[in-house]
Amino acid sequence: MAFKERVFSGVQPTGNLHLGNYLGAIVKFVALQENYDCIYCVVDMHAITVWQDPAELKKTTREVTAAFIACGIDPQKHIIFNQSQVAEHAELAWVCNCVARMGWLNRMTQFKEKAGKDRENVSVGLFVYPSLMAADILVYRATHVPVGEDQKQHLELSRDIAQKFNNDFAESIRSHGFGDAFFPLPEPLIQGPATRVMSLRDGSKKMSKSDASDQSRINLTDDADTIALKIRRAKTDPHPLPSEEKGLEGRPEAENLVGIYAALQGVSRADVLKQFGGGQFSTFKNALADLSVAKLGPIGAEMKRLTQDHAYIDKVLAHGSERAQAIAAETMKAVKDIVGFVRR
Ligand code: TYM
Image (cartoon, rainbow, N blue to C red; front, side, top):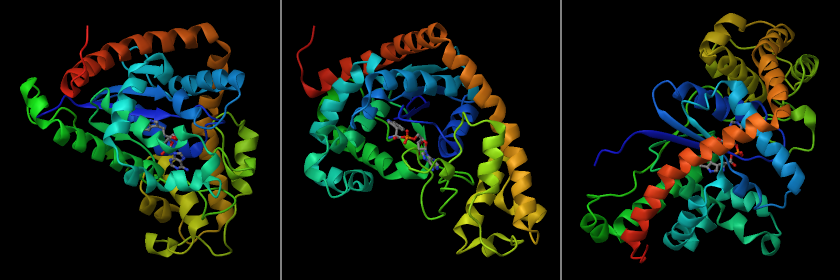
C-alpha cells in the first residue's frame, strides 16, 4: 500500500541546542520542507523521563521552538508544536508499549548509557522512552524521519513496533478497510558529512548537551567570539591535514572538524580536503571559525529575539498543536477500531 509521504522529527527541550543538533537534524528539517509536509515536535514528554525544573522546561521548550523558526522552518507551511499539547501521543504510546517486547527495549543502548549502574532508580518512563518515540512517528503515519546517527536504533525499534502492530492486527486492519498495513515503516534519514558531531575536547565522545564542559560544544546561542574561541581551542593532533579522506582514519578530531566544515558549507569532506589538505590546522581552524560565525551568528541572534516574544512563540505552538491533533485524532480513531476498543 502506498502511504502519503510525511516527515516527522522531534527535539528534546533539555539544555542548550548545539552544533550536533543543528547539523545532525535541524539543517535537514529545513531542507525537507521543500518537498514534504513536515511535522516538527518539541518533545517535552520525553524530557521529563529525567526530572526537569518546571520553569526551566517551559523556557527551553520556547527556546527550541525559537531555534526551529530561526533556522528557517516555516510554521505556517509546516507544523511546529510541543508534544504534551497533543494527548494522542500518550494514548498511542500505551498501545506501542503493549506491542513492544521487553527484550527489544532491554537492548536499547541509549537506555543502558543513561541508566548506567543505577538501573533500579531511573524512571519507568526512561525505559519506555523509545516506545513513546514510536508513537510520535506513527500517530502521524510519518514515512520519513530525519535524525542524527545516535537515534538509529530507536528508529529501528519504531519500525519493529509498526511491523508487529500490522502483523498482530492484520485481519482487523483489513476488515476495517485499511488494506495490508495500517502503519508505514518509517524510514530514517541519516545522511551527510555530520551525522555524528563529536565533542571539541574529545573526538571519541559525541557532542552533547549533558557534557560538563561547555568548551566541548558550540551552542546555537553562543556569540561570535565564543564560537571562534571554542574552534581555535578545539583538540587536534600535530599532523597537517591530509589531502584525501583515507588520511582521516584514526584521526577522530581532524575527521570531526572536516565533517563540520563540510556540513556547514554544504560540500563533501573530499572537497574540504582538496582545499585545505597539506595545510596546517591553524589555517583550517581560522577558516572554520569564520564559517561557523557566518552561519550560526545570525541564527543565535534571531533565536534570542524570538525567545523574548512569548506571545508569538506560544501562538505558533498552539496553532501547530491544533493542526497536529487533527491528524493524530484520525489515526487514534482508526487504531481504537483496529485494536477493538469501543468508542463514542
Ligand atoms: P535529541 O533531543 O537528543 O536530539 C535532537 C536531534 O539531534 C541529533 N543529535 C546529533 N546529531 C549529530 N551529532 C550529534 N552530536 C547529535 N546530538 C544530537 C539527534 O540524533 C536528534 O535527531 N529521542 C530524540 C527526540 C525524539 C524523536 C522522536 C526524534 C523524540 N521523538 C521521533 C525523531 C522522531 C532525542 O532525544 O533527540
